[in-house]
Amino acid sequence: MSFEFCDLSSFILNTIHSLGVILELMAEEFGEKQARAFLSRQEFLKSQTTIIGGSRLFHGAPLLSLKIASRLNKMVFFSSPEPSLGEVAAKIKSRLFSFIWVPFEEVGDYIRKSTAVLIGPGLMRFGKEKESKKYEVKRLDDEAGRLTKKITEDFLSQFPQKQWVIDAGSLQVMEKEFIPPGAILTPNFEEYRLLFGVDLEKKPREEKEKTLAFLAQKYQTVLLTKEDYSLATDGRTCFLVGPGNKGLEKGGMGDVLAGLVAALAGQKPALEAAATALFVSKKAAHELYREKGPFFNADDLANEIPLTMERLLK
Image 1: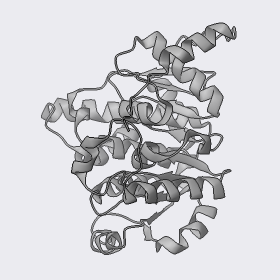
Image 2: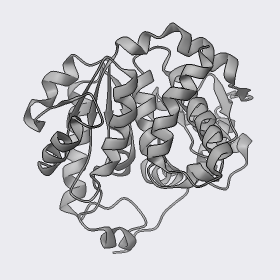
Image 3: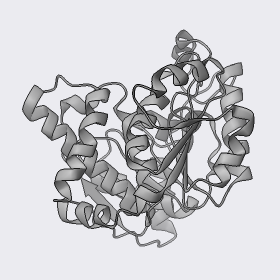
Image 4: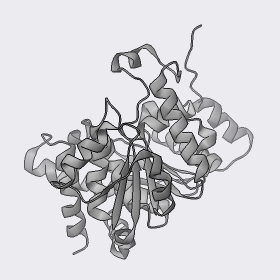
């Protein structure tokens, strides 16, 4: 049986026109003034965030999210379906972060008392990296992917009223019907293709804006893009945030961004939390670029972000 990807971007745009839906969302630039106004309220400092992620292959991803969230929130709870990550967490806890490691069977109790929940960084779509090259569409012939799908959809269904931030492995395997109202999604372009069936990477900005606005309205969510000039929209307002730089193209940067979005998402509105996270991460990347050129990594970015926020608030 063959599986072929069908790009639904044109279908969505045609639907917009045929229904007479007006999506005149000329993107507004989101800059330092808006980011400073959001950060100055500092409500996120009182937030509690749960992070669910990690696997045998990708144990570093949720730790990058944890690293930044633990510096911004009152408390961060971390859990993983991969038991060995508990040992890793225990080793790094005393040296790097302030967080509580939660046994996976107890994570529901911590979700209940959290302000925001991040799920997906480091969760697996495939049990072995080589398997990923066999699939161009979302096929779950792999036990690891089926487990990620079950974990993701079960938690989203059980706690639909929570402020969810959905990232990475969860986006790659879940069905879009499970997106809770108000969730913030942080897909890369491949994950947009897997979740929504749209290929946005090379589309003109205006087409991206309309497609994202349609999807955000339909699923009552906040969507963002990860690119030089990023977009963030809830379907009613669209922000443009940029530029970035070459240093942000490295692995792990999305995990830091997801952790930053989750850390800020306890403070409403969700769209401004997402846009502020994009702005702060890009501004921190520019500070690093001035010092190192493009030769910095995700750990450097996670370390720089609190310093950038401090400067913004002076």
